Length: 178
Image (cartoon, rainbow, N blue to C red):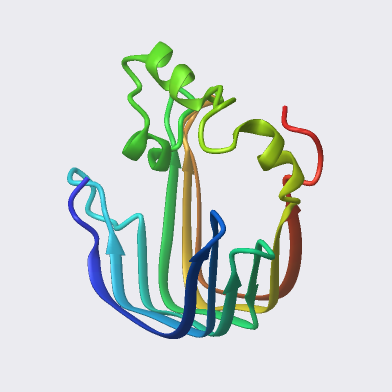
């Protein structure tokens, strides 16, 4: 995977403290912008992802409360490409997973036993869930390309321009560890 191209800009006010064995980190307001971002595979002509701009504004992150709030996330102008190969894997998966060594990939995905390390499982269970809230996510002028070679003759879908607006909330880790 060649190094992704683009320019990142981050601006934030933050508070950091470490006392009584606890870390307090809060960032607000947080502004993040990524311009002219491109991710490509070396052999492919079409980029996997190309964005003129990705912008997050007014965000806040609170480590102690385990919250990330994104009032506005906007992706503008570009393209997203995905191809499903004959082996059933997406080209995006091939960027990061060692296909030749499935045992190594499975062991890397398995949760590690961290009991007794840095507070262990009991501290992790009492910490509560992580919360994510996105007030407005907008995607505008994004071309989509999909090709499926996994079943019979190849199937392709190409959308020249798409848009999407949504809001979302998620909570992760509310239940007991699996």
